[in-house]
Image (cartoon, rainbow, N blue to C red; front, side):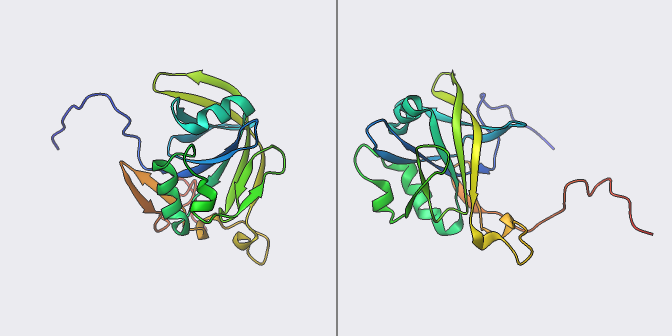
Length: 189
């Protein structure tokens, strides 16, 4: 198989497409679509988001040090795209997209009630990296939709129709191909 060399770029795809919600010190709320989000630590639970300095939400994150990562679904596809191309300087994206605003439990920020999972975060460090600042944050609370709990109380995130983003396009997650550790699991005799 032949290969081509391209200029350095971020080709780590697919990634989750999430809606980040934040509030500034005056009480203004905003939503921002982010695909540059990731897990960085499990104990304590931490994640990171990377945000361009010129984005309206950037000052909210710097001022408050708090935000919510709202997982997105197929039903939230239009809102996910819209909130990434429109500015909160010009409109209330919660109202425009007819999203129900709820409140985080452990921080001062809104959540999206239609999101199946709301991950409440407190910033621990801001890394200025160039075009983006990376906000490292500790997860302080997670709210999950009752609709994703089965009759035994098992959380079934795989039933949420989560979105993925790949090089400018949105996808829904597909068929399960295996489970963690399947490649080394011993067969039952």
